[in-house]
Image 1 (cartoon, one colour):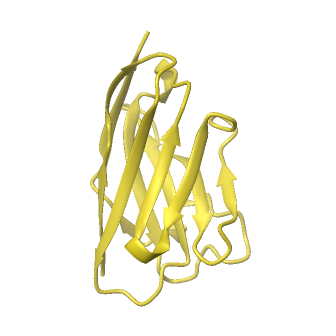
Image 2 (cartoon, one colour; image 1 turned 60 degrees about the vertical axis):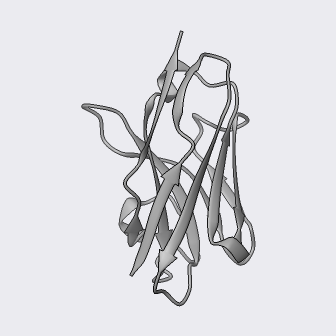
Length: 128
């Protein structure tokens, strides 16, 4: 199965930027879609952004549109999330995920159940 490891989290003041990375390793045949999710203490995990491996089509939650950019380097099996103009509400543990079973194909890839592999998360803290 796929193993995912996030990096790049940290503490930043409001208005600052961070770039998260997620590298996949292990045994797998295909990754159809990659995504970022986040979760704050006491809240449910929420979807942030996704990108299809083959087409590079991207999808964003309304809360991050215009501020976050998701991208990928398929040759390196690496996913990125460039976060600009960060706000205190962005504070959360950020998780990357991969769909290796084609569950996201043909629809908006925003559901946690459609992603089979998950990383351990990287903490992002935004202070005002």
